[in-house]
Image 1 (cartoon, one colour):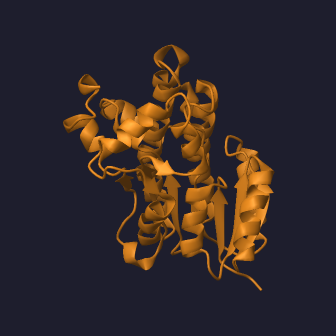
Image 2: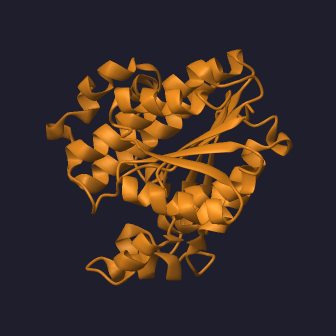
Length: 278
């Protein structure tokens, strides 16, 4: 029996929280570069009554993305996309961050946008980091939004000599995610579908707990202590926003980015997290 299909990349806590909100009655195909991660998450969800299949998927590879789409189409039409794949500044070098978080996300939005069913929806997980850069200007914003995917990494702004460190690369990638979602939403709209992004702040996950206890732990603890919410967030709080965006309640929302960071970015610009105060 054919089902509506959810394609889900990045087998982590945020993606799983979203999939649990919108995945009932659908076939879920979860892809992760580490197949063990995908298998573990699939078992947890299958044991909870969902219908999940795991497969290996590296979103920095167009071929791998196309294989994920092909697998999903074996079960029915692609109805939803959850993209929670990515690498952080402390996990990977500049080149890998740009290939996964920037180029990979752009390709995924492009290829899924070609097959998403009418009425389909998608969310891609960006980051608060994309909101903490100085304005890049209208020309660069348009380049990030509309440059053909295979030419993206050739942009001058993304050349190694123009990138300070892995954090800067990550910020550029996430800024690109936001602009790309705006551009792709126009194409998705031609198919009667919607795509949005969510930019979380510090969210408690196993990876985040490692970071809290690592060499940058004080930095992260200071960030959530001095944000208006006074705490980190949870994956389910991100899923609250995703559920709105991916259901009929969000039918008038597309091409948008939702910052969910407990006010950390506001504090960074206008409060105790201002760089000169730390």
